[in-house]
Length: 82
Image 1 (cartoon, rainbow, N blue to C red):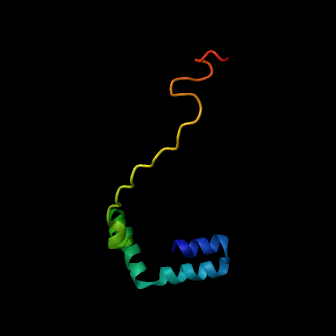
Image 2: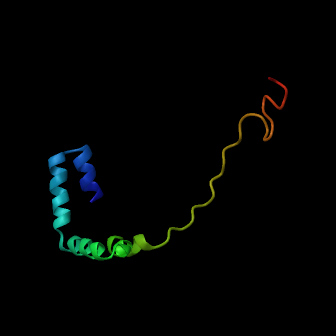
Image 3: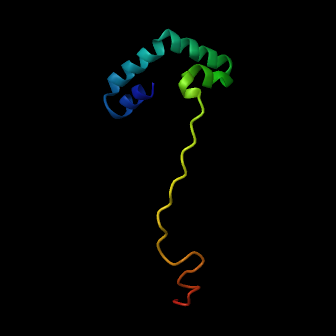
């Protein structure tokens, strides 16, 4: 659906609209939308695949680039330069 809407907005509007209609006409999509209309809390279960519902592994901490400028706690004012 995201691809269909993006195509509508950025690429070929007519082709994007046709793709959107095809997605919305799919029986599985129709059933999922009806279920979410009845109970919005089930969105995650009916709209995401089993893989997408799995928690993401934590990303390793990012290594911060070396700090540039005066050492922490010092600046031009506290150093008496201004």
